Image (tube, rainbow, N blue to C red; front, side, top):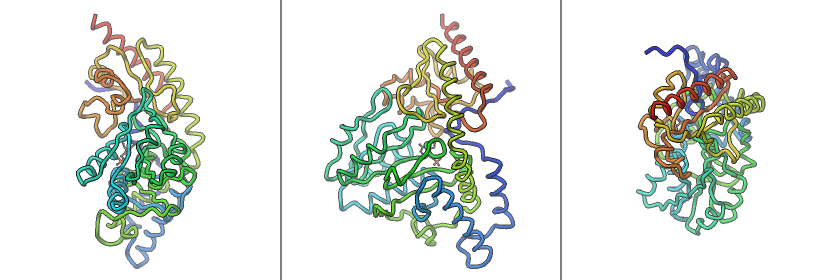
Length: 384
Ligand code: PLP
């Protein structure tokens, strides 16, 4: 059946490339195609473009350009940070702490580290998705070399109190890494103020191209990591390989736009999210997850009681919304995030993540809420 109207409400999965970003990228595929490592005019132009991007991204995050290493995305950056840090600091201890609600980019990587002899503690969360800071403090031992906690959750939008976490972690002599992928471009992220040791993030969540991301390594805190890939020496030999110049140029431009429009976009997004939550609140048995906690301005995660989630999603074919994160949502597993928050498999499967973006307007959220209400009501009626 052809779908007449399509509304995209899955901006936490990915975003469209901003047309201003696309305009800036295009010449780097054709007339400005040089290899950033080549020692001639084409190479110098490409290198200059890469360094301009690094400055633009550093400006968005308030860090030094030299603290950023380009990767193919947040997943690769998380692998490099976790493996690179743990291998380098193996002699200082073999214990890592993370949390049950992290993205798979972190969870699966620390599980791989377990196989290399590292011990990993997975912190619990409460029904809102918050960790217990006392549990964190008590879990840090003299063997703990790294604590890895995300700034904002991709499924619920929940924001962890990283400033408090940083104080605990550093007072115990450990280092702090954060997956800031979902927070960048949606809320102000001042990496210097947060005093993170390592951070990872991605271009395609901020209206830049896919396949490019970055790893932040705190210079002041003297954080060292070991390379995991070997080759031509690019990116100070931490991430060798010919640089993805068009991708990096797009990432830089997207960061420049995110920086200049951050306040306006986050206010607009939050107003729409509040309205959407009001509309969804009129559906019987609808519960907004992490409702009473600090959250991203654009993310709503809602559970519908007594509903078959698979049937609901199938009926909502004009809406691009998700269950869980994009990487795992086609496997129809109940979300590990919602389960960690105490939801049953059935409740987790009957939950939708709706994430708003730059192109979302009031008509979109009204249409979405009406559609969800109609389909939930139809499914409930069909049950009786
Ligand atoms: N971390 C979080 C919180 C994410 O939401 C995502 C993307 O879904 C990733 C990491 C992975 O990012 P990338 O697609 O750049 O590898």
